[in-house]
Image 1 (cartoon, helix red, strand yellow):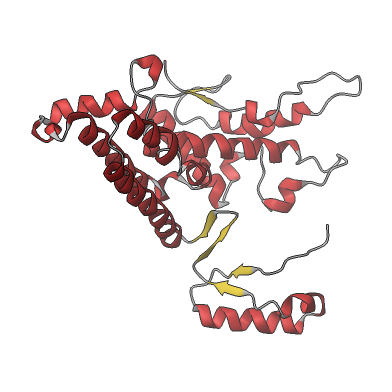
Image 2 (tube, rainbow, N blue to C red):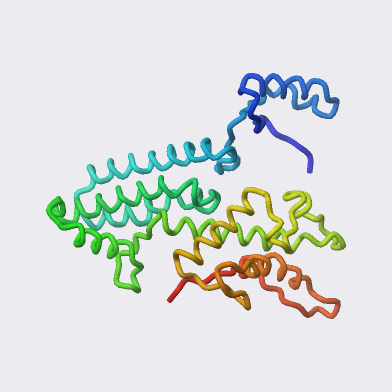
Length: 286
């Protein structure tokens, strides 16, 4: 595949350079390398803090947290506008549940939980407040803390549990990130066999990381996956898939990548052909 980009930006993680110095360094590098001459005239941007790639923030923790906070603040602003314009409670409910509540889901799937939880918690509070205000005509202001907590729980429970199905963004973001990242690990594990016809993508995309040994993971996205795994076990009473047992076990994480190897069909055409996305290691409690 040929590189054909009208523009590009470069992330230069460094503690000793500011953005102007990083841009100058990038410009000199492009001009001095024969293979980069086609890129030298594109006026590339450079940042030492982070950049957005396909809508996903990549950078240091402070930059990513600020990026997420600004995106969530835009959603919160729209919630206020909708609450002001709509007078019908059912229309407001549908707008909250299917539009505003789901807008951060892409960020949730691609951003580690600690960097997004506080912002999404603020969004949860604003959506619940809008629902209560419209549904009670603001009389909920006189409710006790216990009554308000029950109302919030009722709003966020799924329909089959007797709730209104407005899932907590902060809570669901943990499982969203875990599921999507576990699928990535499984897919990379599926393509980490150097003997196969396809490229060894795990070696290209996560160099030096053994997909079958979670204890060796040092890449930020993989360590974040391990943290989410431990959090779901310890605080949300999830159970591990397969033979792994106990909150300290990492067998389930290994299984995500390791079992991907069994997806390669044998010479006789047999073998497990389930997609890597089916190899998630945790189940929510009943």
